[in-house]
Length: 429
Image (cartoon, rainbow, N blue to C red; front, side, top):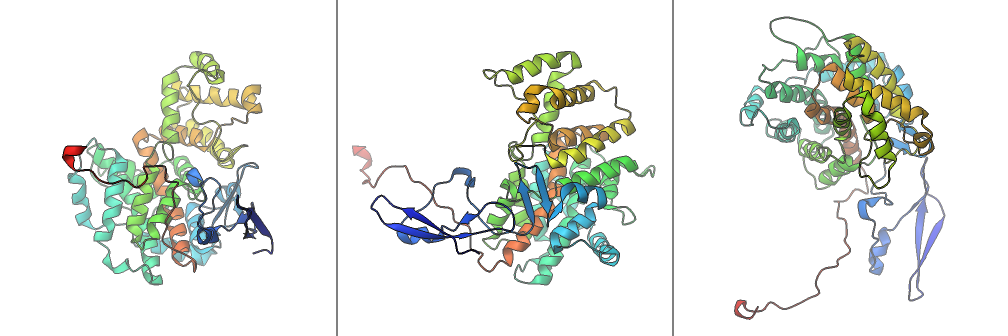
């Protein structure tokens, strides 16, 4: 809190004084909650200039290309920590020591199985249903099975729900994939790491026991870390808004998954890969580059630039190295689609047009390439995004629940409809 005051002068000459707050990082904030007492609202479509909450979890500086989890740079976390350490950090505020990590992982492992009756849900879905449709329904249905952790005002219940969500969402995600291709569900294994266990549930078969490629596991772990949280984005805001009503955590996370499903939010890496398939061959790249530079052409290169990061996406720097490692390990360096991707990457890093406009490859560009090379189909990309983001949603939900000033979300509106009018009898309309 600061002693700075902003003054708003109204058309009638009245002056309203509004207190200002200074964050530890970022822009000062004008507190406008008192405006309603003066019969005024603000109008801010998309809440692009509105801080809807106070948070200590994630900080982004898009202009400088900075992403911090609890103050730690994302590249350091991706290089020095695994996803379980990052989960502990987001939930607890500090990185774990060895003993704390072992205890945390053990508790996660105790909850990886899902109630066997939950598997019956899948039989009610069509085989060709989008995996995200299954995720929304099945994750939301967890509240029908775990009644012993639905009291949001009980700290032990909140913790139990958090662990259940972190542990069970990968199992459910893998079940969504297996169901879509008609293969049997694979039970989780507590002797495998979080990312390794997920890949094992995705691709292993009862007929043989073959652990996932360590390079794929490492890359998947980094993808989870890089997507774990991203401040007050659309899906996170959805989770907070749903949670402000007192809804149970399983319902809140399901609402976040539904929000993430939107192509403008979680479908960017899928859209990027579709674009690579549209280009099809390296020889066609100049044609599409020319279209991208033509302001009159609606075509846009997907996976380049970012709405938030006006410089290089800090997550992309980590993903770039992983992408090349995975392509080599998968033996797909000769794949024509991935060759298109690598050539586009080279052009974007060298072409003056892209450099001047800072249209660098973003995390979605590289994550799509990695997931494709591992063998994960496009319709599972957003599911994996949801899997990774679950810890961020849970952390944000938990923070919101204990916030002393927390209130039910109730945005206002700028009404532009009809004024008050009388209903006419039907024979006079």
